[in-house]
Length: 171
Image (tube, rainbow, N blue to C red; front, side, top):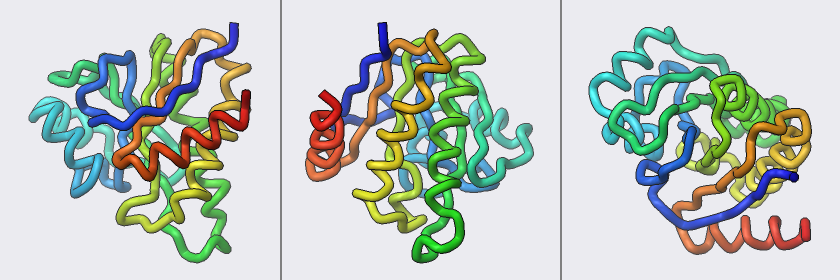
């Protein structure tokens, strides 16, 4: 049975899934946006675990326990900074989604929740990023049959509408 894909508007730090994805910066040590919220909710042990990972390259992903979060794991991935689309941004963003799913599956996760990677301070145009997210997740899941559910966790109702349209087009 293929994995179910859903879009919701919620605070990703509250989701009781096996793994949430952190749209991190290269240091993995927080900052603003979703990454700062995840690290605050996960607590000092999560911050220490991120520090021990020694950073992460754009397009890659690394795993920590969820600590105080409802999610068992946090998959930290570093999306590209938008420079107009001419510096492999689309390839790097797709790699974030692919690698996050691979890392989550290797840890035994059956359910994964994604924020919108690179669309905050990194400046990636939202609709383009959402299309890459949905297409990459759909293309990656057949190779990862243990993943049963993927949630695209949206910050705003406008973001949710974009994901809903993309997912409805798949049916």
